[in-house]
Amino acid sequence: MALGIEERIAVAGLRRTRDRGRVLALLLDASRPLTHQELSRRLPDMDRVTLYRVLDALEGGGLLHRIQGAEGVWRYRAHAEETVGCPGGHPHFLCLRCGRMTCLTDQALPRVEVPEGAVVRNKQLVASGLCAACAATPDDED
Image (cartoon, rainbow, N blue to C red; front, side):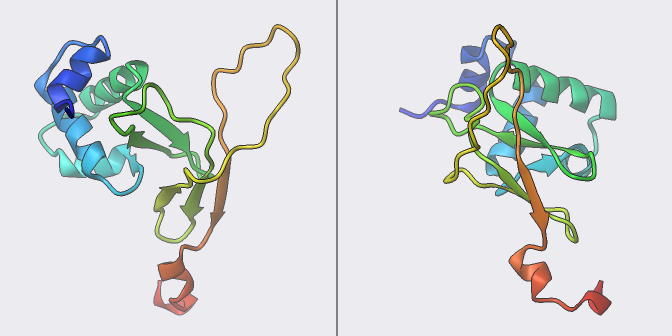
């Protein structure tokens, strides 16, 4: 049986709040990782600071992961219900024209050997270029 959004938040050890539920629902419905700005536009009644706090809490609870694009902007992606914590191990593709980022979950990140005793807290690989739609559109139509 699939868990509802409130149950997922509770299982993650987080307090269930309306804002957390709204953000998680929005990210689960999204077909790609979304920026804070994109989320903010879709949740106009939520202030910026609250949205950042909600995203931090959901990430801390293992319900989403964030990816930093080549331009330095973070994007957020909710995990599938069967995923506990960041699914990790996959690169992302960032379109430099439209800004859309895609999870490439069918591909693995290269293995990296770190110094003995070191603890990896984050790993990411972002390939960037033009998505198929932008590549099919001439530059002069930007």
